[in-house]
Image (cartoon, rainbow, N blue to C red; front, side, top):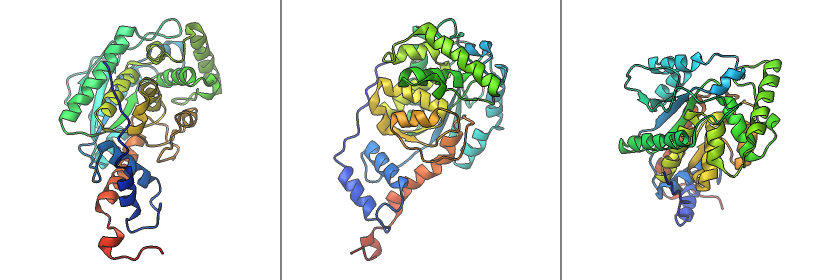
Length: 345
C-alpha cells in the first residue's frame, strides 16, 4: 500500500497557542498536557478537538528466533496470553476497562488456531516467523501482506468512529526482533539495544546478545532499506502494527505509542514516512534496556516514566487519561476573560 502522511497545517497553531495561554492558569503551568493539546488540535485542525471511541489494538505473533534460546519462556506462552486477553484476565484488560478503551486482539501470526471470538481479529499471515538467525523472518510478500492487513484493520475501526488508537503487542521473542530493528535502523551498537526481555539472567542475556549479533552479521543489511530490515528481523505482529500506524496517521488519527516493541514498529514506520511522528503521543519510557535510547533517537519525550516493561499496550492505556485531560482542559477550562479573572501584569 502507498501511504501519504502530511505534516499538519500549522496555520492554526497561533490560535491554539493563544487559547491555551489564556486559560485560567500561569503560562505553561499544565506542562506536557499543553503540548499534547496543541499537537492534537493541529492533527484535527480544530480549536475544539475531540477523542472518539478510543481503541487498543494488541497484535500477537510468534517468532522463529525463540528456537535459538533467546527467551526464558516457551513459545506456547504467546497463545496462552492471547487466550488470557480474550478471557479478560490480563493487565491490559484491567486498564482498558478502567479507562473505557475498546480492546481488540489481533492474531497476526500466532502458532495456534483460536476459536471465533468477537474481540479477536483473525489476520494470521503464518503460524509464526522463521528463525532469522539463518534466514529472513518473513518473505517480502508476507511482510507487505502484514502491513496491508494492519491498515485495513485500522480502516474498519475508523469507520466505526475511532479517531485515537493505542498500540500493544504480545509475542514471545519479540524483544529480540525489536533489538535487531533498533540496532540496524538507528545504527547503534547491539549492546545498547538488547535487554532482559521477560526476565533473562546474566548468562541468558549474554547468550541472547551473541545470537542477535550473529544474525545481524549474517544478513548485513542497509539501514536505509526499512522494509527489508523489517522483513528480515521483524515479527508478523510488528509488521502489522507498522501498517496500522501508517494508516492511522494518514487518516489524521492520534497514535498512542506504548513501550519498546511498539516503538520499534513506529521506528520502522517513521523510516518509511517521517511525518508520522506528528501524530504520535509517546506514552511512557519502558524499563527495557534500549527504549530510552530509541526515544532519544526519535527526539521525543514520553508522558510517563514509571518503570513499566510489560508490553501489551499497558503504558498507552495508563496514559490515555492524561491525553484525554489535555483535550478536556482545552475545551472546557475557562479563559481569563470568561471567568473574569485578572491576568498577570
